[in-house]
Every structure is written in structure tokens, then in C-alpha cells.
Image 1 (tube, rainbow, N blue to C red):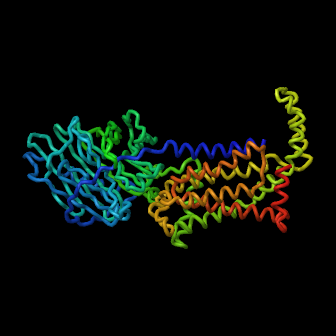
Image 2 (cartoon, rainbow, N blue to C red):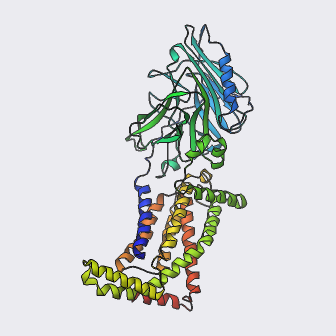
Amino acid sequence: MEKRLLLAFLASAVIFAVWSVLFPPERPPQPAAPQRAVEEAAPQAPSGDAGVSAAAAESAAATDGAAPPTTAEAAAAEETVRLANGDMVVELTNRGAAVSHFELTHYQGDEGEALDLLQTVDHPRRTLPLQLLIGDQRDERLYVVERGDGAATFRWSDGLGSSVIKTVRVPAAGYGVDVAIRLTGDFEPSRMSVGTGLRDLGEAERNSRLAVWGDAVVSADGRIEVVKHRKPKQGLVLEPKQTSFAGFQDAYFLSVFRPLTAVAELRVEVLETSSLDKDGKPVVGNVLQVLLDPAAGEIDGQLLGAPKEYDLLHAIGGGVERTLDFGMFGWISVVFLKALRWIYGVVGNYGLAIILLTVAIRLLLFPLMHSSTVSMRRMQKLQPKVKEVQARYKKKKGDPQARAKMNQEMMALYKEEGVNPMGGCLPMLVQLPILWALYTLFLKAIELRHAPFFGWIQDLSVKDPYYITPILMTATMWLQQRLAPQVGDPQQQRIMRMLPFIFGFMFLQFPSGLVLYWLTNNVLTIIQQEVTFRLLGERGKGGGRERRGKDAQS
């Protein structure tokens, strides 16, 4: 029974890891970003960032106070408006009165460039955030711009009753842009775009088989719907009664619109793209586009572009905190995240923090692991007697009564020897939630993005560029297995001996932070095993290894 449970546990881990490697998100083609225009920053305006801020209502009031134009209004040339605070820089073009760049000041790309949440997409139907769609046509009119105190108002009118007024306001701090849009005449049936895709990935993330990129996320009527960019199927169409937000997310960042006014329809559309890879070969992919249809001729809300940092998302609220999902054991991941950040505050290095967190976890689990090792050692010593019982019934495997009698004798033997057949496996099963929680934490914690360890490891969120830590992890896993009590028949032992190399191959593509945890855990497991054997008196004068070898041969 113990062998079956142990193999089931290991098989689950292997299947989970193999699935991550065999079915990763596809790597998106990255066309070159166009040259950008920059103008002077507008003055900052005081505002908050918890929920959809009061400045959104202020923007709506300012827009409502403006009378619909009775004469034609249009600009003669394209221009760019730049609004900024300490957390973000937002640039808008008056062509379509749309956001052309949304930079997060405290975050950079792989090459140290400013991180822009807008993705470069070469597609005729690409739309920018806040850009309108009139029917199937993108709004590319040149709007008249009025700059204000940390805000800008865009106006266009044909003088015949059709007009658009957009007011955009950036607060003094935070990641939300407050938006108010008023539509009249032919513009009333328009849809507003939340954007097309989410940011351009750097080379390190493109090379990661575990990178999550450009998924659409919609929260409506109390439910969150996610459309994967890798397998989007047919997109998504909703007619929600209440909309919390709609937009895009990846592992580390979020770009969504949070409406204050009613939304008649939400759409996630799939656009097929084509580009050339580094060898000049054509690559066909897709990108998602999110559109919302207002219930009336007005759209008020907040365009939120933010890092998926745990405390920040919970401070913003409104359901966006649910986009940072650590899985079924998320509460354990949160505990480890808080512990990791506390340790980092002391040592100033996330690599060291991972090592110290692993040490703390192993100390807490030492009683369980000690019990598991002792139980497996007893089972190993009992193997000759177990094989004797199995040998007596070898020729009666197909007889249910004989098999039941063999199991009764086995249980009697365990009871006589004081061995719990579940004792070695249950402590390992208890650790499964911890391993899963740590796995999801290291994959999704933005704290590890671009966080250096030392030497060649300068980003704990991507793979080891020289594969040194996966090789060390494989070697320590093999050594750990060689030093552990050997249970099971020879065929099962051969399968177990292959596991270090299987795991080592899969971990080649895993984030170096996760590999560092596993490597540290292996080293601590070896130490724990040696401590347990010394407590059992099996490590005196080299006799422990000899005795274990004799038991394995018997």
C-alpha cells in the first residue's frame, strides 16, 4: 500500500510538471516598436487610487458641464499629450483621442527600457485604449485638445449634432486614469476599445516556456472570465447587468477598464496576426481585443494599468485583487509571500530570502520528515519478510480469496513488527499543498521579476541562462535518493532512479527562483536524512551505509 501511495504521489508531481513543459503558452512574435513622440508633462492633480477614484466623477462632471458644440471642431494636425505622476506616464494622441503609451515608472523591460503596457500589433483592426469603433471603422479623427491641470479634454464635432467629448485626468499618485466620454448623434452606437493585447515581451520572457502573455480578463455579474490568448476559441460576448472591469492581464501586469456607467455588451475578439521569426520564416499567431458597448451615450470610469502586486491590488479593490490567483492553496502562497518579503527586508536579496524561507519550512516540517524516514527505514528492514509472504501466494495471484488472505497476513506482520504502512507516505502527502503553493508563488510573484541573486543569476523569474542550478538540483536529487531507504521491488527502484533526470530535464526551463528552492530543499533533505540515521544509531563508524546496503540486497 505504501509503495502504491508513494508512486501515486510521485506520478502526480511528474504529470503536473510534464504538463507545464509540454503545454506551455506559445511564444508571441515581437515586431519592432515604432518611434514615439513625447511632449511636456501636464501638472499633477491630487487624487486617490483606492477603487474608481473621485476624480472620475470630477471628470464626468466637467464633461457634462460642457455644452455640445454647435459648430464643427477638428484639429489640423496630429499631436501628443503627455500626463504623468510618480507611478505612471500616459501619452495620448489626438488622432482618435486614444492612449498611445501607458508606462509604469517603477518597472522596466529586460533591457532597462520603460515598461509600456501597450502591445505593438501590426493589424488593420488594431485599436488603442479609449479609441472608438463606429460600426467596423476605427475613429481616427483629429480632435481638438484642451490641456488642464493634470488633465486633457479632446473634442470633435461635425457641427450637425454629432460630437465626441473625452476628458482624461491623471491623479497625483497611483495607477488609474480617470475617463469621461460623451457621445451624441452618429457616435451614440459607438463601442470603446480597452486595447489590443498587453505589452511587448522581452527576450527573457519570450524564451520562457511558462510565460503568460496577453490574456483577456472580464469581471461581470460576480464572475471572472479569462480568454487565453494561446487558445482563444471564439472569443467572448457578454451582456452583463453589472461590470466590474474588462481588459488584459499576464503573470505580472494588468490593464483593465473599470466602468462607472452601464455597459450593454462586452466583447473579446480574436485577431489573427502574421510576422516573421528571427530566421525570416512566417509565423501565424493571434492577439485579443477587448471592446465595450455603453448602454447610453456616455462612458465614465477608470483605465487602470498596474503591477499585480498583492497588497496594491487589495488596496485598489473592486475585484481586481482576484486577478492574482495563486491556485487552490493560495492562502498558503500568501503566507509564504509575506514571509519572503519580510526576509527580503532583512537580507536585501530575494535569492537569499528563498534559501532562508526554505530552511524555515524544513525546520517546521522536520518532525514529519523524520517520522517518514524512520517509517521507510522500518519498512526497508521488513522487506525480506514481506517478500516471503508474497512468494507463498505468487502462484495464486488470480484467486481473490488467496489475495485477501495474503493481505491479512501482511497486515498482521505490520502489526507484529509495529510498522505503519502509511507512515512513510502520509508525511509526504502533507507536503504536497506546500510544494504547490511555492510553485505558484514563484511563478506569479512580481517581487521576483528582475530580482537578482548573485553572479550569473540576475533574474529569479526566468530560467538559469547556463543551466547550472538545474544540474546541481539533479545531482542533489540523485544523491538524496541514493542515501534514502530503498523500498519497493527492483523495477520500482529503477523507475525511482530515473526521476532525478526527468525532473532535471523539466526544470531546465523553470524560473531560477523555483529551481533554487528545489536545490536548497534537496540539500536540506540530505542533511535531515543523515540526522535521522544518526539518531537511529545507523551512522556510526560507516556502519550505517554498509548495513543499508546489506538490507537492500537481502
